[in-house]
Length: 142
Image 1 (cartoon, rainbow, N blue to C red):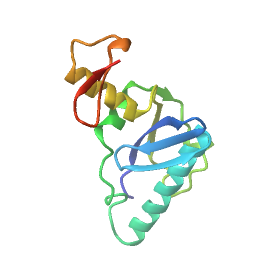
Image 2: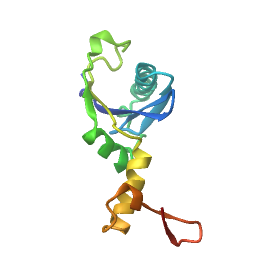
Image 3: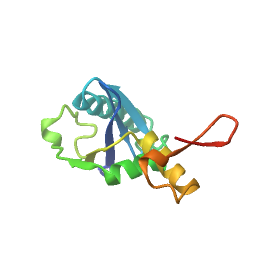
């Protein structure tokens, strides 16, 4: 029997009414109108790729590198979501996977920008003092 997959998935609302579910160990992401739809879509894509890889004698999901660090950070800072595989529409291709899900508190792209700004301007901690970079590369303070 093949070793069980370990999958961490971060959920976040990219735009109002557009949820993203992004797998971390193997960078696969989908969208949905609701959180549960995005998660179900991502699990369906994962199951299809696992099936394809097994049919072709490959290690499941080996073609997918890990997600960028900002998504791992969002997962670590997020709120764990109770996920029970037996209650989800998983098929037998990934029903033995260890799946951990967390809901991010903010979009990973926004968190990354905030971290970059804090590194660039460490003495600026107030929201009203957040620096943005203009296209010419000069900082602009609002």
